[in-house]
Image (cartoon, rainbow, N blue to C red; front, side):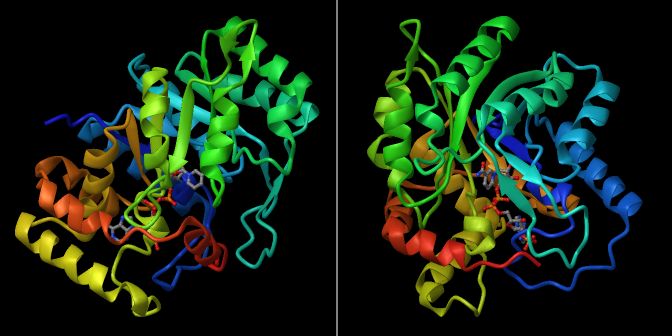
Length: 317
Ligand SMILES: NC(=O)c1ccc[n+]([C@@H]2O[C@H](COP(=O)([O-])OP(=O)(O)OC[C@H]3O[C@@H](n4cnc5c(N)ncnc54)[C@H](OP(=O)(O)O)[C@@H]3O)[C@@H](O)[C@H]2O)c1
């Protein structure tokens, strides 16, 4: 069984607030304590064998934390993927109402690259953070040319991340973009999980092109873990609990395993916010779901529009 498909996403360790489905009480925010907890997650991930780390400047201190940490490791096998396009604005203030601002301009790309390139040589991937049609980023010739220049000057991969009910259309558009007769994008970080399976319709085409597929939000930001706020998922929770008991793992591992087996991606991102969650997520490597079980889980997929309208209502706390 391949045990190297789990990477670590750093959204949950970079900011005091993030999507928090379980409405857990948060401790009063202490920056130094928060950083140490983040480092502990990076360390445990490394000890488990994780060598792929996804970050973004929009994730508060995550990118800097990762930079400081990766230098201490001095390990060329560690791959870092970062993004540009969101600016973190909350300044670690738990009462902030605006956490991040989207900016897909050339100026922001140039400015952000000056910071993110410090991650070299571990930096292997630069992604447009949440590429959408509304910012026009996939039609912005100056931005695309700049990305192509970074790709060739620094020998890294260029990718997009997608969110939203039209993510398949965005992927199709991105796949068509060539610069100097070469596809610009070779990495596609896509939301996929038991509820949101729209990626399936384009998976083979993406794979045929040899692209790297990275799965994010494999737990639907935590919605796949039993929660009384989502009574419409009770049947799904029942099956997940049954499978978790059968394989002696948590529901998180079952849900991530579903992603692994149905898409066989280059990587699935764990969104663990602490060491316990990371160790539980890692159990994805301990078992295999049967074809029948995969089919039963597939049945719980919902319409993309429904998925994303529920996603929009999730609060940061
Ligand atoms: N647009 C983008 O580019 C974009 C968007 C989203 C994510 N991402 C990337 O993808 C990564 C993963 O995304 P995500 O964090 O939304 O993924 P996710 O795996 O769908 O959700 C992670 C959340 O699930 C809960 N969880 C995980 N393991 C658990 C366990 N064992 N027990 C209980 N709860 C558990 C935690 O929620 P609690 O905090 O409630 O404990 C955690 O924050 C991010 O870190 C980021 O790198 C990119």
